[in-house]
Image (cartoon, rainbow over all chains, first blue to last red; front, side, top):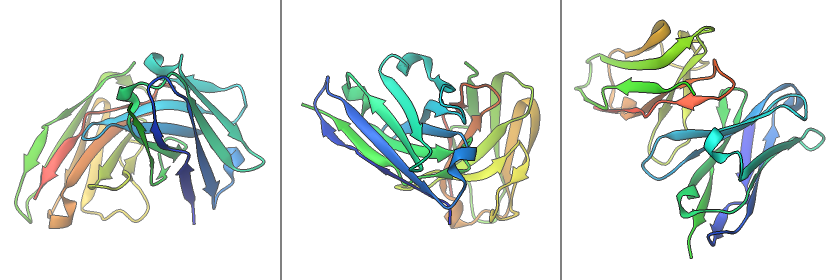
Length: 114
Length: 107
C-alpha cells in the first residue's frame, strides 16, 4: 500500500524554525517527484514546493522561497521541509504529496503562536 | 503563476441531482495537466481526476470530467449525501503548481 506519513509539526513561537518530515512507503520513492502543500483552517490548498528526481531540481512558490527549503533522502525514503522565520500565517496543516498529488499524507499540524 | 478560478463557490443540491463544477485557468494548459480533488472535513484531499478527464483508481463513474485549454468541468451525477465535500482543481502544467479556491457541494 502506498503511504505517506508526515511528522515534525507542533507549536512554535513566531520567528522560530521547524523541520517537517515525510516518510514514504509502498512505491519506488526515488522515481517520483514529491511536494509539500499546506492549508490554513477553512482556507484553500496552497502548493509550497516540489523536489524532483535529481537533487538540485527544486521549485518553490515565489512568496515562500526565501523561508522554505525542500529536500529528499532517497536512501531512507524521506522528504523534508525546513521552515525558517515562522509567522502566524504559516499556521495550518501541511501535507506531503507524491508526484503531482496522486497520493497525500494525512497531514501534520503546525501552529505558530506566542 | 497560473491562477485557477472555480465556480460556483457553493452548490446546494438534492440527492439524485447533477452537480456541474467549473475551473478556469488564467493561461492555456498546454498539456491539460488538470486534476480534481475531493476533500471532506478533517480529511486529506483525495484525487478524483487527472489529466483533465481520467478518473483515478477506485473513483465512482458518477464522477466525470472534461475540458481543455483554459476551461474544465467536473460533473457528478446521481448525487449522494456522501458527495458533500469541497472540490478543488489543480494545475501541474507549469512547474509552479496552483490550486483553485474550491467549490463546496452541499447535498
